[in-house]
Image 1 (cartoon, rainbow, N blue to C red):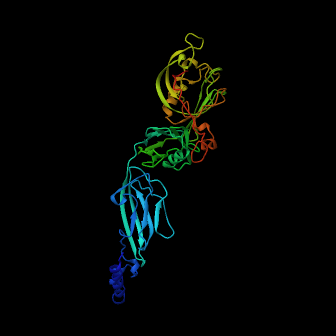
Image 2: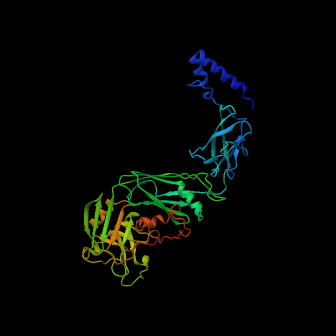
Image 3: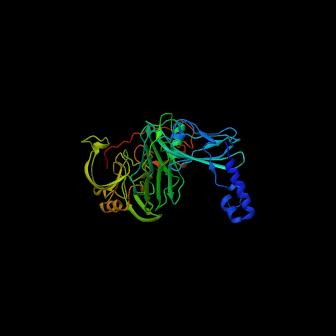
Length: 417
């Protein structure tokens, strides 16, 4: 390549330095040095692999930039897509070749800026843009719950459109799913099964927090045939920290707001054979009226335990039918005995107050019961019943074992009292 005209211009600028400082500054840069001149077009000095120069590239092949022999060397390469993601790469020590070390994203536009220098040390520059082909098989991700305000116990969920079992692909997915809380909260994803992830912080979310969830997986290669699809971001907020603790042995419920007790109420919980589950549950929803039948939880019609009752101010905490609700038929036992079929019963006025005070995502914990501990995933949000250490074992980034997949089928049964 002949760069003589450029060299001659540099000499002219040098002469101007002697006679006129201002002219030298305009021609050669702030310090008048020829190397500070405007970079030349390095189009003839470098080549790209594939059809990059024509604006197309194969996402399954690495990007390569090569310097023409004897025409100088590459000093830097910056590649970025329209999502603002940098493409990692490696430059050889002699500056003759740069290649990407991370997969290209499918269906994505890239801009690549290449810096060079010629045999005289003068700087060159070449910028190209290209698009990668789209993939036929895409992984779609739906975040949950719906946008809105929730209690501090609400987990974030990610539902995948196809199952993912490969550990490397799972790790790539986790790295691409971003959760940011303001104020900040340390958290982690947990693979509930091959298509479901839950995210929770180490402790409950901060009160009055903003939680933003997004995916950086658009076009990212996950397996040989699967690429990430665009995902709708999610924004949640939390309200006050509401915690209700039911002591089944003491027959009371104590409700706190931001650490301060705001109410203590007499209650009744599950009787022997129907003991209420211990552990932390999360409010799943509220129903002002529910008809509850014993058959829905396996109690035979006509038996001594059979029932068919209208129930008001019902706050659901499990999918299988455990509620906190009004139970006017058991007011004589509330505060002194457990007589329900697993629900937490209270007076109508107390149930209405509770119904109006809590929201989805608030914490309802039961202690002192003879029942089993709430399971983590198959009957609502029992996520908080796993210690932080055990929770982290469900992460593909923090736990390299391949036996983390769990098959979960929610028992969405009708309610019981």
